[in-house]
Image (cartoon, rainbow, N blue to C red; front, side, top):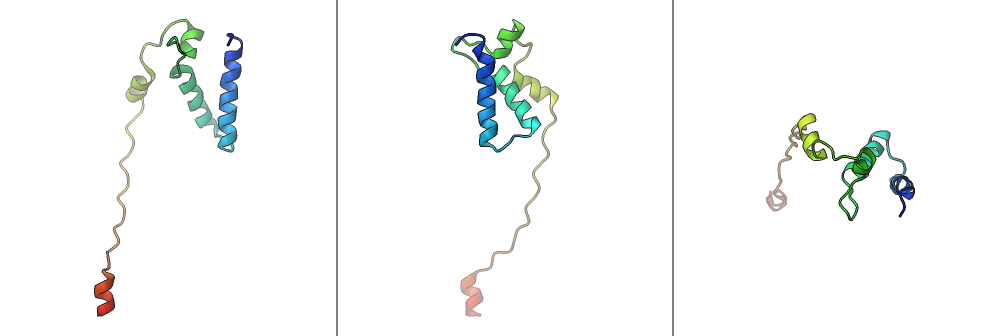
Length: 92
């Protein structure tokens, strides 16, 4: 592929993904674009961001996100329903 076709491939992949999901919200589309630009590599190991900016990012994307984003909240506790033993309940 020539350098001119690369952005078209990126847009094509994202538009296909958006079509499969029946419309992505803007935040998800932005997240997929960032992943494509900074994480997806070619055979030679270069990313789209590396080729565009001409240098590697200061920190890897995952490490940067771990430092910037807060930890997610704990999941809520599920209400436990009492277990009814059907054999004992039917015999009574």
